[in-house]
Image (cartoon, rainbow, N blue to C red):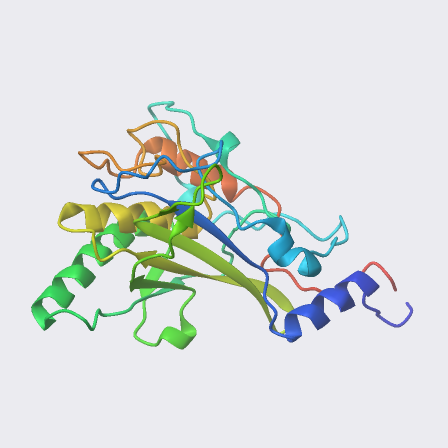
Length: 269
């Protein structure tokens, strides 16, 4: 056996990420009932930051690197007795594969709002946590109090205005979910930030958290049906997590990814 070496492309990737110039993508969804610009979407129901923003960081990884992780027991045990189908075809892969978590429990930090009363802040946090914890049936989650260790951070903050592709008029959005890539112990990892607009009130806070958290768990796309939590826009009576949502999540976790695997190429020995 010869000396273990790293693939030159892997070396390049490590160097780029070590400069902390992180590839960031965003999935924008208008989940607020009172936001009238929720239909400003791409043909697949979401918008990705244009490629020229991060083109200097896109690296062609060796095709042998992406592979599937074992299914988490909670998803492996899931069986849809209703045969409801899924919307996996609407889920977009990324330059590193599907956005699959492989280390559990997933650590979630909900930032307490500071611009409202303590009572209002607690009500907002409780509503967000209700939406988040609905997903714990399907993937192990834990709530943490230290933002620096969180895998997913949720903040009560208005997302940046969105410019429509066919006009220069800025549009309001009710939520934004973004992720970034980083390395830890030579393993490629990711983390998410979710912004929920302060305009959300009542049950729509919980609904928005439920929807955006589905993106953060790996459903990087939208459902075309109003009965699914990941429907591309908010409806008057927000649905709970549907069998189609879970079927889609399970299919995502069966897919290959570079996330969670070592960046060392063991093929050259």
